[in-house]
Length: 324
Ligand code: SD4
Image 1 (cartoon, protein in one colour):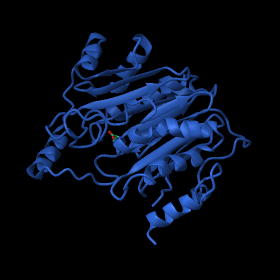
Image 2 (tube, protein in one colour):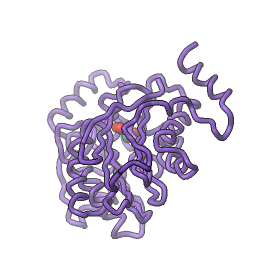
Image 3 (cartoon, helix red, strand yellow):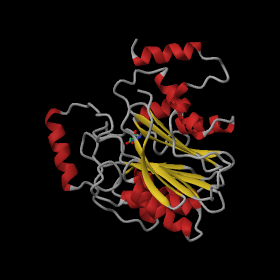
Image 4 (cartoon, helix red, strand yellow):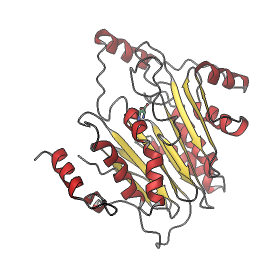
């Protein structure tokens, strides 16, 4: 029986309520709440999570807030021109435009977001300004750019030569065929907990490479790419945003934790919500989550998703367990 079919069979035989998949037996770096865990951690997606966590931890170790840490961590990746999926250097849409999506949430339930933002180096900081200085949550397109320029951000050309060449090469055939874990799955999603135990998060991306012009993914959607509830925990997503949006993944995972699941169990259930409904043979989604006790969880559809965890003085990469 195929993995998927046996998985679905397990689903139909699982009892309601305690209907967790056997996934929760996967080893994870988290410790249960009764360990000698000191408040303060940063967890973020992919290899670039290492420098992002480091920048975020610099804020936390000096007594800074989780939200400042979340912003600084994201900025670290946005400004790196060699990363082709976030900020400058991001691969463009099919027409050659680099369009950025980002959001941020703080410990008080405040949220800010920008979508389809062009020519601004730090969308996460624009999202922060939307959160802090406007009555709105989300600004998009020209309005988001105008808001950024009015607030002192400068126009920057985000299309690097390397990304332009990659796009020109792609444009010869112009086939839209996302490759799992490559080119379109390197959003940075980051969750931070400060020394008070308060949680915040950030998520920033150039989105799926060679997307249709105008396409916006999950990353700037509060509850999809990121959700933080300081009473419970936080979650963030990476991967094919359409599937995260259709299941409102990060909100779902936080709500699962509210109902008593560990972050690991909640991430697994979030993935299950996708794989039980959609053909995921060529779709990657990865989730990270943290609860108030400092436990963490990670789960993906396919192997290949990794994440960085800064906790107890160590900043390390881990491979996420996966459904397939
Ligand atoms: C999106 N989730 O726009 C983003 C893409 C991504 O790692 O890279 N995720 O759908």
